[in-house]
Amino acid sequence: MAMLQTHYDSEMKITKVEALYLRQPEVKDQCDSGQDAIIVRVETDAGITGLGEVDSAPLAIQGVIDGPYSHSITSGLAHLLIGEDPLATEYLWYKMVKANSYCARRGILMHAISGIDLALWDIKGKALGLPVWKLLGGGFHEKIRCYASTLFGRTPAETESIGHRLVDQGFSAVKFGWHPMGESRAMDEALVRCARRGVGPAADLMIDAGLVWDAKTALQRANAFAAEDIFWLEEPLRETDYVGYGKLAASTPVRIAAGEHESDRQSYQNLMDQGQIDVVQVDLTRCGGFTEAMKIAALAYDRGLPVANHGFSTYLNVAAALHWLNAIPNALICEFVAQEATNLREQITRQKLRAVDGFLAVPQEPGLGIDLDEDAVRRLRVL
Image (cartoon, rainbow, N blue to C red):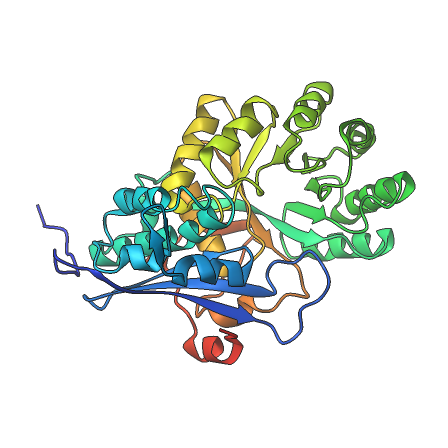
């Protein structure tokens, strides 16, 4: 039997951890987190570099990563990692959490850990010559169905036009979200009616409400939207309204999807058990990276729940999601951004991911299979 070809010294150590803040020249006032980005880069003394991403508040993430050691339970993350073995992903995940239990255990801290964890798994894959999904034990798919994810048009008519365009591009599932949803009952129903008209009767239609209603209003909207045969209704309630989610999910046949605001497995347990959601959405750049996402997927599987990724940022996020979705048995579908106004993702990586007939190919290259375009990074880097 041929031995696995490795590309690293068994004593490989982390030498540098940095957070690169990239930003478009123009950032529009809209719910589009792909207009800037925090890219995490971890370097080793073996010459292997790993990449990760964090979809969060950029300067806060830089502070968490670059900050100094304060005391035994509050420390900048880079300080904790220098000199460590990058292949020890589980150990390093817990080291970062334990060393910061005083200042934060969810939110910004977990977001920052996510980017680092993705980069460490990227290093591991490159060192061993294997894609991350194989290291995670995966192999469920050769390609994964995706949905075109976009914002609503400014009007119902514009929304319909967007739907036509995306279906013409080969997508069999489309999601519309956020403003002007929530302005009025008439607007809400017109947006969904025209979205369905735009994508046609055969495509799956997802609606992302964007946290705009209370439970009673959400139930009224879900029942109205059911006439348009929507595939799921996403985040209709305030993100911490687990009681409201439970009431809503129990009262409508429409699938309720949520999870992008959660940032560790305990908060996902609250959303699944108390909130009773139907589709668990996980953002690899916020939830704790691959190390935590695998545990979240297992919790969902034990409850008979499908999972989908959340990702409205760069191709690093998409690639990470594809590796993860290929490594779990309860993957449902992959979010793939189709928002025309965003172009950052088209510039900062050498690879440009493309859907073919509504599917994305699972990466086969070692690690994440994504490289930065260094010229674009220099041009777009703010800090």
